[in-house]
Image (cartoon, rainbow, N blue to C red; front, top):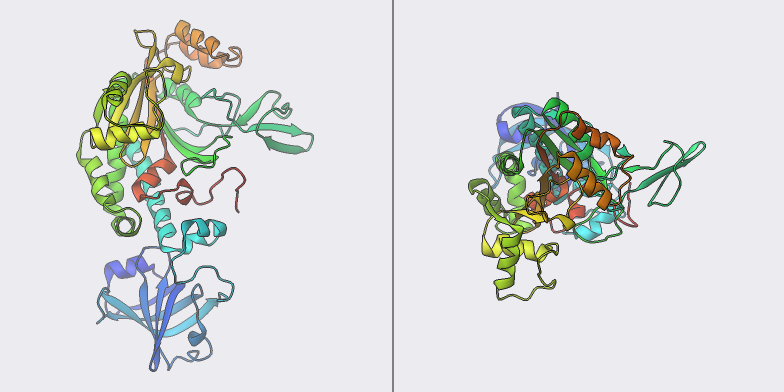
Length: 458
């Protein structure tokens, strides 16, 4: 049975007869033999294979191997005399599985920009950095489910096609249909297939509330969509969201869970993806590992929105966006607060009601809501959440003020008619999290197939 390179390097059973398959990173010829470096994507490190000229296909095939070719190697594992590797493999047989034309294969030994690699979404995960991103993303996915399972949460699959706009910002991809044909648009078409207006979800929160008020603790983890015509390094048209929802939980309980989740995920990836993180620390974002460890080790600071505005108004700093009470905090304000003022993650609470969606609970002052954002150094906001409005009359008033069709949200109001309870939740943008963990500057590098305005490869 074939073994992964990661297992071979971890166990290093010198003298073992092995079979391994992978893709060629480099071939270096010497007198009478060649050094082949193989990768199979299971880890950052490659396996050095020594191919002797006595192999039957040494001249006809092995000497013609180039970057990207795939091979199957049988041989003996032995201790390596070279620095930087404990073992190497002496091949007894090498079978070429697939050739890669060196004239047209775009991934060569020289370093290539991430922007260039976006043109080859079907090939870019073969590079060291993008393969490392994929492994980190996969590990974080496992850690998310582990965190919630250990705390008694039930995963709920909320709909991708929805009839409710959670954020009320009008940025849903609308779905329309004609007989025999389904269509997606950015809006304006009359829907026929579902008999009413429907679109791709921007959040699973409203539906998660349904199950939270039946099961107590639930979470969603799935794709969401925004038809926002934005081509920045922070925005995607399709992205993944982690959204827990808890009954009998106020804002304080909500903030504690969000902090615990972030610290758990970072600790997990530091433990299980150390080699990949070292790559990012060395070549992408210096000091990355130290910053992640600092988040794990420190309690998050907490201030209100009003306190944040007061601090921003008193500092000797000219911001691109002037600060005043009632305006939304921009990335430059968020990063200044958590990087230069507090030097650690920061939770900002109690935002003006006018800045937030209708479902957030109104505070007693009548002008702020029980909302919270978690800001982290290097990226700004990474989590946004709130205590939900569980009172029927205040919720109805907010919905009417937002111009929502109350009849369409009758089911949501029913949750307040029948056994309403205090409840809360938050959203953690998964790509923002992966971006933070890897230090990648552009969010398009942390999702396998980025979807942005005018760009949808594969």
